[in-house]
Image 1 (cartoon, rainbow, N blue to C red):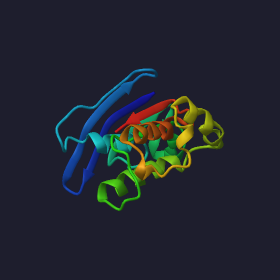
Image 2: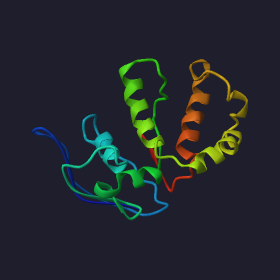
Image 3: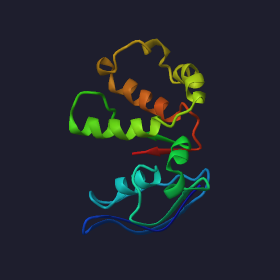
Image 4: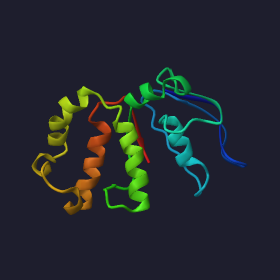
Length: 158
């Protein structure tokens, strides 16, 4: 499902990701553990097609990220660890941009599935509610719905 070879990401002279090789099979659960600044988020952003590597290669479900980043976005769902809103804080804006970049690739299938998925997660009653007023548990479920609504074969939890 995900394959990387000699994956590197540099920001100027700083090397955030240093020669990562991954082979993650379909159905496998995989996680990154490491200290702050270890390159976990940068790697996930590259795997999602939001950030191009400085060198190396990535294929996601058979698609080369460098050539087909938009096609990759159709194949993934992303759930941030923090629910974002349009509150204007820096973290909210960054999370919002990441999720909007991915969700721009979501198909008509997602629109057809939205009511069923909202019902599955017990959220139909809050469709007209302001997200800012919802308890955190509802916000987390909404984030999960957003990640799953287009039925992606691959889901990232960040």
